[in-house]
Image 1: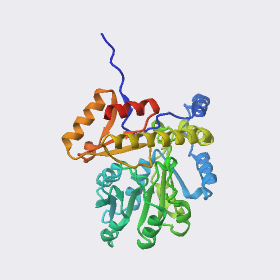
Image 2 (image 1 turned 60 degrees about the vertical axis):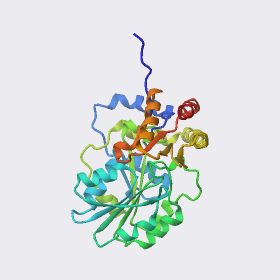
Image 3 (image 1 turned 30 degrees about the horizontal axis):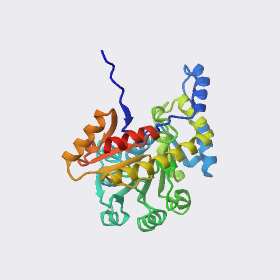
Image 4 (image 1 turned 90 degrees about the horizontal axis):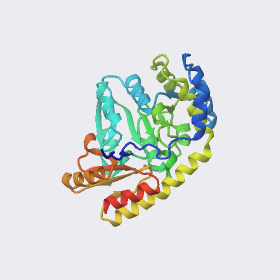
Length: 333
């Protein structure tokens, strides 16, 4: 019997290059201690605080940034308060708001960009949290420093603005916000980041939030006992040490992202310029999209059909290495 070729995963925005070899070494050393209950991730909090020049009390480590999003909604949003989410954005905001029975409103995008001008009409006395994915998943577009600063100036101080920077290490646009600088004058800004993307640790579930101390202490109280495993902490610490690996991944991603964008554009695809490790494609109708999706699947390329997230005419492709990107281009021809 002929063995089927394995599908190449291009549907979850994972780091196609994996993780740093230093991570494997760190995990191997830690394996002898797996019979012990994990301690709080104090070492990781200290490392992150030093890297970003903030107080350790402002850092909250969680089992993935999704768990922190869950904590923000569950802990900081009362049942009668509201959440603002952009359309065509990270599906977890909507899913978790619904799971906790919190009302959420959609702000519209403009040309696939999260348009902050569309937030103001939705703000009322019940508004508590605004979630912004930046770069936005799945479109790959960003809001700029000036736009985020304007939003923070205009929203009431009681409204929390959560800027989810899961893909920030892939950014090349110089207009990307300096969120830490803005946070110094806007304590209602919460910054979310993750080790699941460029650090290649998606399977270990490591995310963190940087926020005002009052907010961070509230989030820490919402964590369950033994919420974080000891292998994850050592892996994250090792990943932070290997800056060369991260720089190399970002550089390769930039090169292949440009190659993909230009070649897909030449072939008539409606692709959106991206600042992430993925490309977003919009189609005129669902039939055209489904035909393209099937062609990728038939060629063992598992891309993301965004229909499962309520976007009937869209596909998202994780950027692979050079050989994989050539296959993507060939498949789109």
